[in-house]
Image 1 (cartoon, rainbow, N blue to C red):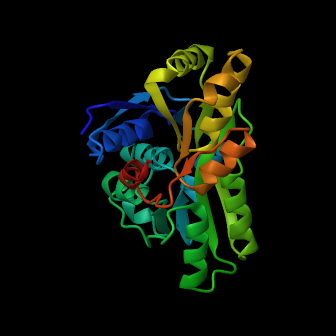
Image 2 (cartoon, rainbow, N blue to C red):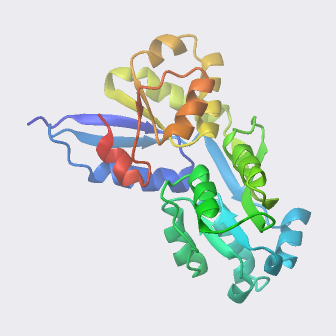
Length: 269
């Protein structure tokens, strides 16, 4: 049994990075090696509840049949206005749901029970679940997600909105928070970690936006291609992997079970 440390560079935003790091640390590998996470977020997020779109959403809550939160940050935005007394729990009459484990955060943060848990923890899984539940044509659905700044918006949310509209729903997108790429300082920190490649095994991505910002390193590191050949790119699910490949990254591992970070951590080769 070896006592080797396997370093994992995590590119997720702070909240998700902490959860993934915790999951990695709890894994007990058969070879005795330990997973040691290093977190350098590639994107930053912050709630935006002062926009006209969000105010309009708050004023028309009772008019939606479903409310979908695409991330924890979206849930936090509603939590903020609820704490300020602008939203009462009783007003969340629409069937609320989130993606995967974010449903647990929905319960704890808003004290709202999800109307369902999709079998596949993804936007596609939500569409499939809605289609199986009832005739959803004409139903009104609000999707709370990011307003993207300083990035090309990944396909995930636009594809989700399109799929809902194709299913016949009346879709309202509500920008509840802002997502933006980190600056050069954080990128150079990531570059330093990558150059210690003899001590780094994995670069882990949990979203397409992370991959997009990470790829900016190719303009800052003359040896980027060489360095990336010596580490393994691992992705939390197929949608993230698709975005990584779009950014020209070689994907070495995609978690088949992307229901939780714990499952992802245990599955790493």
